[in-house]
Every structure is written in structure tokens, then in C-alpha cells.
Amino acid sequence: MPSTRRRFLTGTAAVAALLAGCNETDSSGSTGTVTPVDVPRTDRQILREASEISYPDVSKSVIVSDTHQRAAIRHVESVIERLETVLAENDVDFSGFERRGASRDPTDNTEDVRTRIKDANERIETAREDDPSSESLRSLERALRTTSVLLGFVLAETGQTELADVEATLEAERAAVADIKDGLEYRIAQPVEEHLPTLYAAETKLSRSDQLQFVADTVDDADPKNDQYATEIGQVRRSIELHRRRRDDAKRFIDTATDADAPPLRDAIDRNVVALRESLEPIASEYRDWDGGSENDSIASDLRRSRASVGRRTSRWLSNMERHRTDGSRVLGLRDGLEQRIEFAAIDAAVSRSLARLDGREFLAEAVINEKQRAVAAVEGVAGGSAFLRDVGRRSTSVLDIADRNRRPDGVAVDVVARTYFLYAVAAEWATRADEQCSDLLASLQAKQS
Figure 1 (cartoon, rainbow, N blue to C red):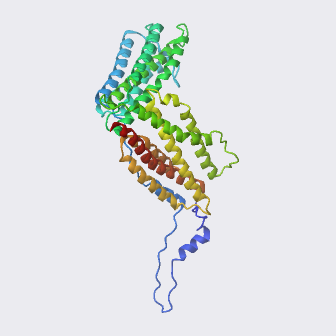
Figure 2: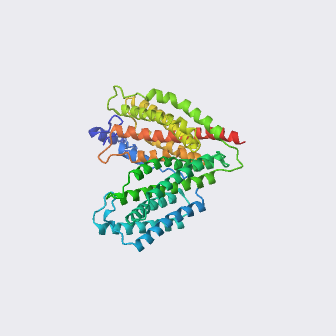
């Protein structure tokens, strides 16, 4: 498709442009010379060239110790061992075991059980061979999810489940989470910027404890006489084992990220959370009731709607201010609030940059390459930065990935070029602002420690 630069070089105009590079023969009869002329690239070529500009990976920032990963492995092993013991001692009928997309054929369900156990064991072996990482923990959690539901099912199916015991287990889990939160003093280990993401990971795990109430409701409604009883208990067991894993993860992350000899940063964190609230409140107020007005379906309108959508989302963070200042959620609120502010600022700036070009007579596709290069330079700064900067700035690479794939197989239109430019601008602004704002926040926290 012709370039969006006013769709020039189409038809005979393109031919004329090519011929214009050939000078006429001079009057002396000497051989004429040919002056090379750059043939303008199509939008498709420009977008492809931009997409081929590589950018660095941003390494993960959460610290996982050897003992942490071994504990996760042992947890999954214990579930599998008990499951295999029960299966060896009992002839379990799996015809009642249901999952999404599962066949009602008992033979198929039995095969599914073998597959789940085999997959879980493979994940365990992989985790043993790999260095400790958050990816390994997620893989092990997946193994735990698929095997613990089976364990719960077979225990219920063989009459080895007492609802009173399940209720007691749930209460013990609630108490264990409360103890972890009560023990948090926010004595973050030095250097703070390398340990904050790990403490954030801990509080993210703790935030999932709210789901225990839904599990308790399921237990209250469970009836051993119901045909779905074993399936329901399987789901309950899965929820309990996952909660145990996340709670233990949280405790170990906290042990890794804190130092009993470091000064407490609770007050410093709270001050930064309040500052985030003050900067986000005007944004939420401006966009809370924004409904698009008389906006049409143009690319410019779409960009403004994107900005408004992000602006409205700030209200969600603001609505949880009390929680953001509660032990067990402080770093979670701090980091998420910072990301909200960075996201809005990045999109706001990218919209302004894009609209300035759209307001002109033409949108130069070549600008896309320059914007991609600007984004890559900013992402390189994130990739080489602290763990906290990598954690907060990582999403800029996700935006780059989306932009690189923002092409249509059947040609390129002005809106595709503009959207791609916008996405590269978002990535550049996100990485740049993450660097600036993370530095400011860390300086505030480190001033307290010095």
C-alpha cells in the first residue's frame, strides 16, 4: 500500500519519480550519468524496519533462595506422595471427577489423573535442575494446583475427609497469615532498591488470603450426600494447598527482603503513599465521569479514550487507601500506586506527542522508527537499572512487543501507523518516567535509612 505521506508516489507519479533520477545526455554527445535517488519506503517497510530494532530483556527482580525453592518442591512432593498412597490403597472411581472440558468417560478421567501426576513430577525435576527463580515457583504452583485437587477428590471419595477438620485448617491458615502481617516492621534490607520487589512479591501473595472466605463458604454449603461433594472437596483442597504455598512463599520472601538490624521504613512508606494519593486524586477527579463526550471513531478519539480509561482506573487505587496503610499491604500499595502514576503520565505524554503529529497535514511514517529508537534507549536504561526499576519499568517491554506486532497482513493504513507510533511513545515515556520516579522514591526511603 502507498505511504501515508499523503499517499504520494502512486501510479504514474511513482514512475515519474524513478525516472527523475536520470539526467539528459549533454550536448557534447558524451554518455549521460545516472544520479541515484532514494525510493521512498512504504509504510509496511517502515513498520517492519521499526519492529526489527531489537531491545534488551529486562531481567526478573524477585530474589528466590535455594531453601525457598526446595521447600516449594517438597510441598508438591508431599501432595503427590499422599495421592499415590491413597490411590494404591483404594480403588477410586473417577467417573465423578469433573473439570472443564473433561470427558465423562471414567477411562479418560483415569488417564487424566496419570497425566497430571506425570506432569507434576516433570515440573519437580525441572525445578531441581534450574536455579531458584520466580518462574520455577510458578511452575511448581501449577503442579500443586493440578495434583491437590485430585488429592482432595480421592480423600472425599474414599471417606477420608471430615468437614470439621477442613474448617479447622482454614482457621489455622487465617491465623498464620495474621501472624505474618503482625510481624512485619518494614525493616528492608540494604540495598533497598534490590529488596523492595521481593517484599512486594510477599505482599502480593498475602493479598490472596482474602479468597479463604470463599473457600469457607463452599465448606459451609458442602453436603456429603450431594453427587458433586467429592469434586467440591477437591476444589477446597486445591485452594487450601495453594494458600499454604503462597503463605509460605510470602514468609520466605519476607525473610529474604528484610533485616532485623535495618531501621523500620513504615512511616517513610506511608508518606510516599500519601504523596501518591495527592498526585492521583486530580487525575481521578478529571476522568471519573468522562464518557467520551462527542468523540467520534477517529484514531485521535481512540487515543483520548485510552488516556481517559487509564485516568479512571486511578480511582480503584484511591478507593483502597486504608488498606494501603495496613501492615501486609504497604509495599503493595506503594508500588501499585507508583505504577498507576507512571502509566497515566506515560500515556498522557504519548497521546500529546501523537496528536501533535495527527493535527498536521500528514503523518510521517518515518517518525515511527525514531520513536522506536527512543523507546529502546529508554528500555536499555531500565534493563541496566536496579531491581526496583526493572520491576516497575518492565511493562514498557510488553508495550514494545505489542507495537512490533501492530501490523495488518492486508496492508497498512494511517491509523495503524499512528497507533504504532503511539505505542512506541508509551514505551519510551514509561521507561523514562519509571527511571525518574523510582529514583525519587528510593531517595526518599534511603534517606530514612542513612
